[in-house]
Image (cartoon, rainbow, N blue to C red):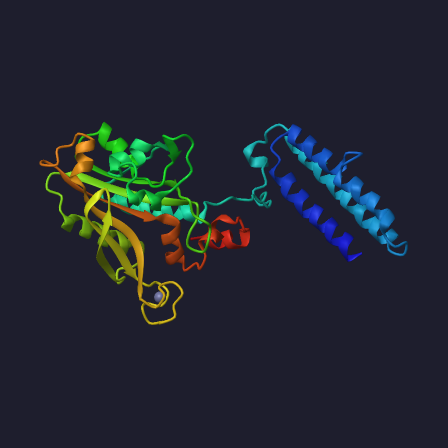
Length: 344
Ligand SMILES: [Zn+2]
């Protein structure tokens, strides 16, 4: 009995939501068929289920199904009358009647976070660029100073479509595409999806979002890079966040630096912290001064111009900002998880 009661309640709730959102007569007809068609309608099927119910419960269950059917018929009828009615004069409309409840969708938390990042850079006068997710070997690797057989290519393994075409492993090829088209000054960020050969675990995914930045102009120095990234990270997290630059290596920048922020979970106070492993620091982005060879590859004179570039994982950073222990949660489509971000 409990079971059939909850099934009836489920259908009633779904029907009420659907009938409120129906926009015209033909949608109304489809809804009528869904619930009342003689073979497969939900109500028809409920009536068939009656046979399996204990005979003592049958009368009550039958009554409940019939009540649902009457409710559906009446609601359909009422909606249908509304479609047929000519538009009312303004003074005939009763503004005190309750409105139809609409079910709203929401932006995915990762895209929301991306929008926050874009907003910070737009305020600094950057523009937003995008490029293809399927890239040529030249744009993804060679122009960025990874010749064939360069060992750094191992870290950037991906899915190949042909020998020359692949799913891009970073958003950096868009830097090349922009520099081939435009002459400096250039001040851009490039957010987008990238692909790597990774087995999914709490901090790795075979598909994730990255944001890349590039500035090229006369007299750009490491001080500009540092100032820009500090301002960005303090706006994204908070004014008091600790930031440090560590020397590193990337084939397309020289010198290169990785940037760490103070642990957002333990603030460096928990020796067993699962986010920073007790070090107090989280690696957050890679950056550096654009390698002169990269400028030569796109016909920009490295004697006249200099620039800096940086790249950061969006989902990974969102994980730290929202203190989420497992990146896979973003893509499991569990509404209980996703709805927490709806009002942010
Ligand atoms: Zn920590």
